[in-house]
Image (cartoon, rainbow, N blue to C red):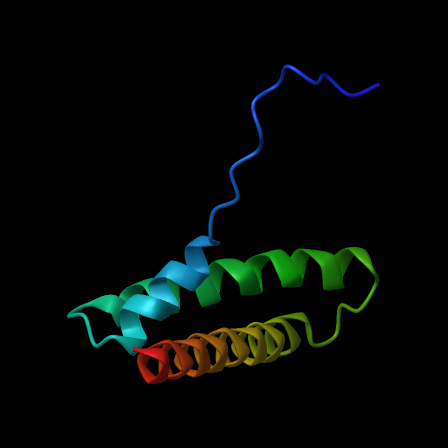
Length: 88
């Protein structure tokens, strides 16, 4: 049963999206956030790979997967920013 008196859930952006936006905007030091989120994501992916039994190349696999995801995030932010600037 749903509580109809509960306040609506506010959606927020993911921290990696915020660091990607700062990087795309050229804010000084923003690359640290991108690297940090990529490393954190790689750690989470590595845990999943290890738990799944893929233990031979956990670190390279996790880094590659995390880098691919970060590249997607950066591309998405750049595309959306370009669309927003064209709309103005």
